[in-house]
Length: 335
Image (cartoon, rainbow, N blue to C red; front, top):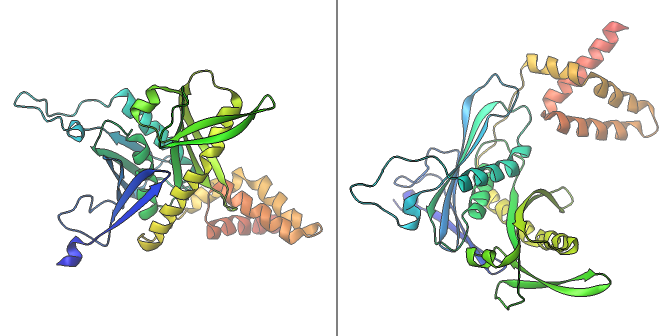
């Protein structure tokens, strides 16, 4: 019976902020989200967010990815439980909830296969709210890790942090000063990583930054969202560069968890009608890549060009080889 309740707890401390990430090991009756493709519980301070990811079983006849990201706020998260006159029906999402869901959507949508036509739902539910830490950051990480642990094909993970610059140079345990050159002078700029609500009220810059790791291990930023007063361009660029290290740590943490517990990803098959449509659309590029073989070091150039084109189309290798084979056959038949 011990195995029925076995859970793995991983505690990570990133720049003086504790992220606790829990995920299910095998199956756990009497636990939540047992039927989701991937589920994870992420906490920042005492703010806790549950992230779940599921995928449909049938292909939809659409020309876009049917992805739904839902961010759910609950009154019980802050301990507000009403009496007999309490309205138990869920109301419409707040403006902040809608903007948070859009922010998460922008961060994860580009990394799904372009030929994926199954319905995908990512639901983030705020379980606890400590009124100090914004739930949007744990929700963003929960969305990334739940997709990573699921059987849904997705080229993640992504990481995100919030950077703040206080109006005054008061010493704070979460403040990290960095020197930047402004008008040939070095100025120390105190950056606050993942500031609380109170710190954000007294900040002249509040910036959420997310990114993904490329093949060389560098961070590629895919989303910047924030507000602030008039801040020099050098300080903003310095804050963006400052966020690279914590984002890289969060991404490496998610990859470590994926190695321990993850499901085999689904293989999305492309039917013949889709292949014919793609063949007609990318005919000129396919033939141009094949003609590269006639040049010096042509095989290497053609291979790299075909790999780049395959990533652009969003096909797996067997389906892309079918496209190339069809072009070779059609070229010979036309001759």
